Length: 137
Image (tube, rainbow, N blue to C red; front, side, top):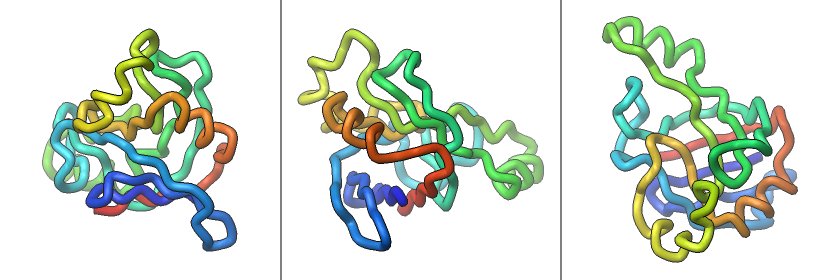
């Protein structure tokens, strides 16, 4: 299981309920609150799954998060907005891995969860398709 804490800005890897690794992360530029619509620059909150692994991404490796859930879609429909999507756990933008020591101090994504490339490699090796990911406030 993967748990992400927005308040701590950490991603935790767990096995059998015990944390075995943690890594600093960056979020969407508007990190407070649950993602409500396309373009709000928020990272969703809740329980999802890693549903795809993308080695050929615009970022150093990417794990796709199953947002939006049916509930997210319904809530967006009620508000008359597009819930957005394409939420990933990923490394740095290709060609900019060297800048992680600076950019990881800021919430810079459009709603994704970003790690340094070294840490993304460790997460990549530990997380398979179907792994649960819980994103907490």
